Amino acid sequence: MMNAFLYGVALQWKLDLRNKGILLSYYIVPLVFFAFMGGILSSINPQAKDNLIQSMTVFGISMGAILGAPVSLVELYGSEIKKAYKVGGIPLWIAVINNFIAAFVHLFIMSLLIYFIAPLAFGAKTPNNLALYFLALGIFIIVNLLVGTALGLLIKSPSKLTMVSQFIFLPSIMLAGIMFPVSLLPKFLENLGKIFPATWGFKLMNSDVFDAKIIIPLAVIMLISIVISGYQLSKISLE
Image (cartoon, rainbow, N blue to C red):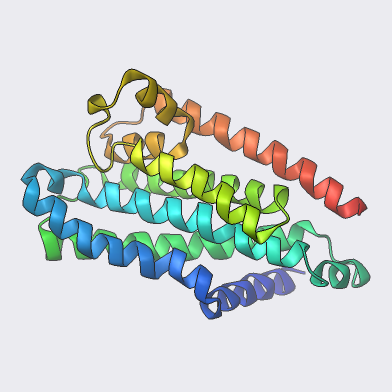
């Protein structure tokens, strides 16, 4: 059973690498954005180097999890592959877990590339507390992937998925404080940004101490996403 599960995860990981759209959202666009914006931000504002790793990582993870991860689920549950799972007696949640783990590995690799390249290329400052940073990184990836999973199960049309994903991704990036301080925003927009995981993930990865006040909003987003995903999976299983 375990071997079959690991094989499924590895297969999903390889399929992602062959999917140009997913490859773009997991690696190419985040790293190209990092290459351009890393140089621009560090040149315009030398203080940006203090959290350049965190800001570019938040962008990359948000893009991969919100724009990339749901695509595989929509393609699977909206095709004949779903019937193959049922005929083979394979629980439909297996595909969700496989996609989740494979996406986590992709996004973690992308985050490591930013972590190691940023200091060399742009003189970016590395986090003071590495253990806390990587714990925060893991939590942020998980929360974003849970949101992406909920989207992939909730929306059946690829065109609608693209529209809704962009509607979540763009405001979360603009209001998270990774491009400019949130204090420059009107109070309404600053508060609006707090409903997105990017805002809290950026704060968590910049923190030198474990702050429960930052974890609570992420936990709420995580719980809501799990409930939505579980409900949608039960509906899909009955179809």
